[in-house]
Amino acid sequence: MVIIVATLLSLAATVLQPRQLKNLEIEKKKSMLESIGIPSIRETTEDLYDKYIKESFVINIKGEVVDGVDAFPVDVVVEQKKPLEQQYLPVFFATIDNREKVTILPVQGKGLWGPIYGYVSLKPDLNTIYGVTFDHKGETPGLGAEINTTSFESMFPGKQLYEAGKFVSIGVIKGGAKPGDKHDVDAISGGTITSKGLEKMLQDCLYKYNDYLINNRNKI
Image (cartoon, rainbow, N blue to C red; front, side):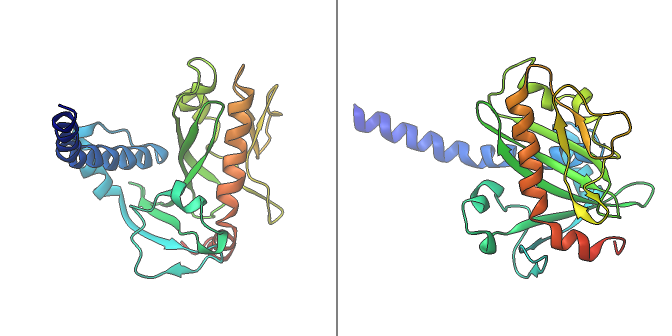
């Protein structure tokens, strides 16, 4: 009986795997589209992705393009376990309807109860945020889970990663960012640990692109 059950479970996993992988692919494309302000549903995601996001590549920590590596399947979680100089850093380009070319970068970190992740899109100056999308596994509804809400994500567009040429990232400030601050957003009320985890995620992940961002600003 044990052998039969194990065989059935193995068969079910094999049959379901392609569907699961497809679901993950669509969810990834949907998230990238959301970071540039393009909403989609499952039925439209792939067509919209092909319409707006047509270019991608991988760079190393020095900002150099790595030939022969497809950016889309690169798993940031896996890459973070490698030595820094061996990590692949995916870069995606989207062209918005007004012909503005936007750069999309993945981010991955830790919240209070589990992984947090998302995408940050940048304007052609590779400094100003065009849009973001964040998500999580297991953060508390009404608290840390608020990172995946329009009210939180809408604070990021227009914020800047650099000040006087120095990378400063984006601060997530408990008690609220100062009015007009170009580098900070308000933290989530009651979600201090998740907020700080997101702040660290942005600092750690985006700084890896520093050489690329500095060397290619205003060239896109």
